[in-house]
Image 1 (cartoon, helix red, strand yellow):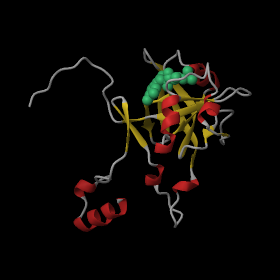
Image 2 (cartoon, rainbow, N blue to C red; image 1 turned 120 degrees about the vertical axis):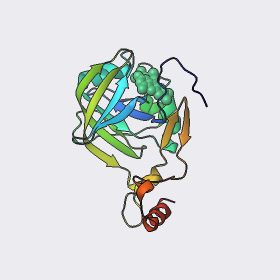
Image 3 (cartoon, rainbow, N blue to C red; image 1 turned 90 degrees about the vertical axis):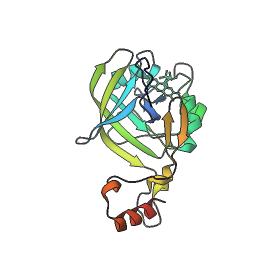
Image 4 (cartoon, helix red, strand yellow; image 1 turned 180 degrees about the vertical axis):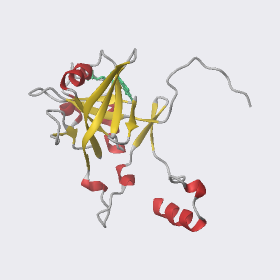
Length: 199
Ligand SMILES: Cc1cc2nc3c(=O)[nH]c(=O)nc-3n(C[C@H](O)[C@H](O)[C@H](O)COP(=O)(O)O)c2cc1C
């Protein structure tokens, strides 16, 4: 085996593709698809989204200092792709995609998207001008999950969200669970029980 060298690029994968919603007070909300997003701190919980300055959403996030990260389930994929190829300059994306804006605790105007399974509402704490993108580091100040994710016992079943991964230009559903945090060192009985729970 030998490696073939490639020109440095954005090859990290898989990554999420999320719908980031934002709004100025009194104006229509907008949603932009973002793949350059990630968890960057646990306490306080923080995520980053990297947005090119030419995006319509960029100035809204810059001015309002807030955004909402909406996770993409399989049922949201069509809207997620569409919001990634059309601009809020030309369209009311919520209307075009049949999305419902829901107001969120702690946000002045940025809404959550009712059709998405999970939202993370963020206040911008830091901006890094990196070159092609401005990275907004947001503290999660409130979160919500759809009640459709609750199982019969009232526990959250994240599998029900059917989240989508973005892998080198294409969208994928998540396959079967292959393991869990620490499974490589779990006792055999724990391994068997936990893996059965993940099926
Ligand atoms: C899968 C996917 C991922 C994307 N990721 C990003 C990203 O991380 N940052 C970014 O600035 N644009 C990204 N885009 C492009 C924007 O979503 C796109 O330019 C969009 O039309 C901008 O919308 P707006 O002008 O309403 O803000 C992505 C598009 C797709 C389809």
